[in-house]
Length: 56
Image (cartoon, rainbow, N blue to C red; front, top):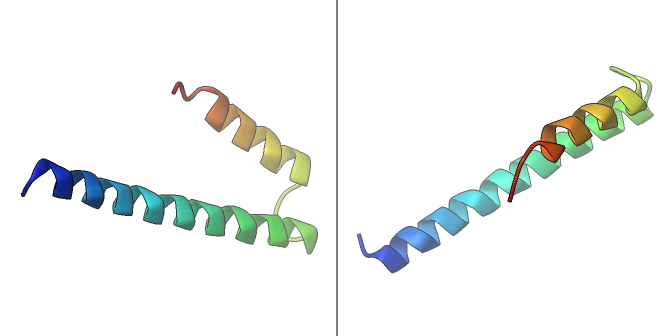
């Protein structure tokens, strides 16, 4: 497989992962809005902690 094809495959996989994450976040957000699950502040605090550690 050529390096260009590997890059394209990586980008496709990365895009699909981002799409799945967005869908999961939106599902959780809608559950919170309907009163299911946990408190929205707890939810967003956890997201902030998870992504503030990541270094780009």
